Length: 374
Image 1: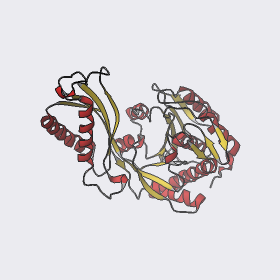
Image 2: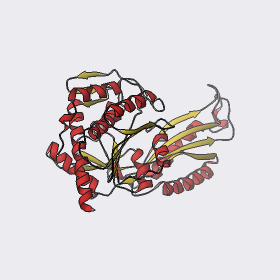
Image 3: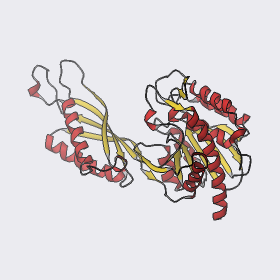
Image 4: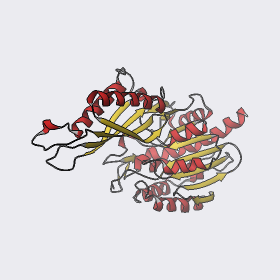
């Protein structure tokens, strides 16, 4: 089996540091895309290009199986000084998910034998509206397996993500009044809070003591209303973020919402309009796929432990590819998911380097298992 020693550890750390120093909030990923394209060229990838939405795409090898390695280049807003402290490398995106992205790049580049066709893609806008992966799906490429780079820790494999509905509610109470006489009209902001709470209570009911990965959750994430400090608001807008487990789907939640909103509107004698801002179906991959078997062997090789299969409560690009392509897909990468989006986001350097080794070995195991099945 190939050795990851072909990747210099100092080089691996340096390339991750350089990527972290490029500030790339959603839809501002161009500097990183150009940097990765240069690295792909130096590391022996072929057919390197940046597509019309800013994704960087490169290939390595040929034949079967066709393996997608996909990570996102964007981060949430907010810069963090890139620095090393003991075993940790700090920086925006260190956990979510530049360490995973560079892990895939270097693991693929270290392959010296034929493991099939590897397509490496760094996508834009994963933290936004998924414009990057949606554009990739328009190309209708064929893959046998897909691996998404997201922090899971080395000893866990993510097999499922919740779906997501983002809903905009527009509450109109028909009239407003002077703030000194609030009894003359209803208050749209107060109504919005009451309605949002009712919807949350109804959608989350009957789930007590169940695991967080298999329950519906509702969060009010934005609210906007009012025109003046001394006028009660006639209208208010609210955004609800609804996370949907694999036991249901977006259509079922939408149908329940429509009935609830209609009933609440009549009961409170106000107008409630809603629109869907984002709709992503939940996804879970098969537990006994060759892909999971290959990663189990890769993790055993390096960490000498069998991995745990986990379901995440978030939503990612894996959902979109999984629903459309219906192939074995996992999410994997160094880092603690709980560090993501925080003010002290970091990744363990040791974990990052061992993650490269695990992915490298898993790709070779996958080729062997795939050919054996054929």
